[in-house]
Image 1 (tube, one colour):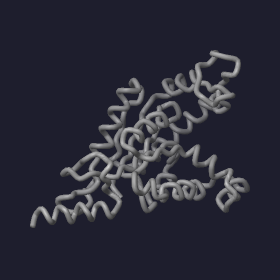
Image 2: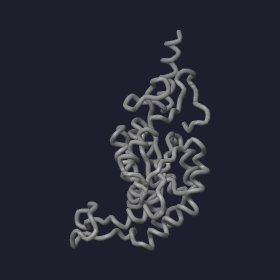
Image 3: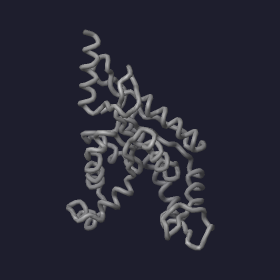
Image 4: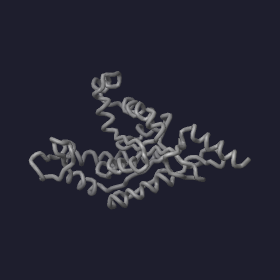
Length: 244
């Protein structure tokens, strides 16, 4: 009877979108669907880490800047509004909502970077039908972020990252000027960070992203796997843990 109850609760968790057979094990051995948000300033490594985390767990990786560019080019209602009026908080949320409700994201789970950018973004994300169940802050200081951003460039013919000064086609990205970087970092540290932390609550995990990439990566993987969302023993949400 006890075993059948556990099985029933595991099926119930799966049906609610909290469990999936391709993901790691937590709580009492049930696999979980990971919906991960990596929050951090530009230069914290959120995009690069997000790609690797998605690859490790078999998740869908999304960077909001890429989703926005795609939406801007589409000939639909959202694209028309973006071109006419710019990116309101509602349109930004709609862009993301349309992506995370696609079957691959629902079935496999996802990793997101570049969103939310402020408290309102976070509220909109949390109110979606499949909200994140892992919130991870990558904390890197201003100077570290700026140094990383100033030391990167791209080959304008291939679009691939390259070392600054390594060739005539290698130039900094237009958003990587010192003035632009300082503006973005100032906004994040003086305004956005406090809002995001308040919205995330006490269940968010904070990681020192000033450390080497591999060290940060291992800590992110551990944070993803260690964050339980559903109590299979009792078939209920865990208290004080961000789930759905």
